Length: 247
Image 1 (cartoon, helix red, strand yellow):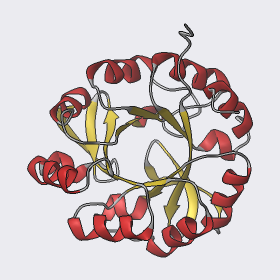
Image 2 (cartoon, one colour):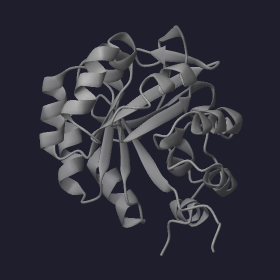
Image 3 (spheres, rainbow, N blue to C red):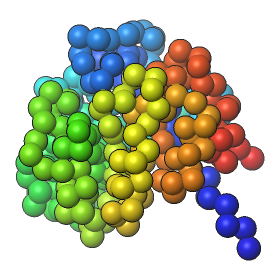
């Protein structure tokens, strides 16, 4: 019997701010790099390079609490045929319905899940397997409001709180590693993976094919890759190969 780890999904990240494709360092809105004025074209580029799914973030929405880059999101969804997930500003039922009707496969809820857990449970049951719990951690504690605030609840405790709900995934980001090109926090990712039964997607710091392979060995369902793809230090083809995602 083949005991090798199952392939993991590689999610190229498209972070949206002011209608452009950008990357932040450690979630700092003052440390922004603009990579493209045309996010839909960037999405097509990743798909043509082999991406089978895309991770979208409305950075303005995450900070301000309401969806902001809707037109850019619509253009991306209309341009590609692969599954797209979106986080940032998803904080009410109307927005959830609107985005799912737009064609997004999965929506990520973070801040609102922490602040109103019963509401989030209700949404999980209204939209089973269409919502993911977004957990952004700083020093092991959950960060909210586009990473501008740090709560007093641990990332693993929040994950366990919702582990029995019909979630599609937990998106786990270590802010200290995000955009820093220093590799993921493997110990924290493994701890999260071992604490829950819901599939875990790791985000933050994926820099090399070896990082992808180590995450695959840990047993996470996928990883989100941003700056290293955009700066060319990790070609998408190499990431897919390390993930076991190539044919």
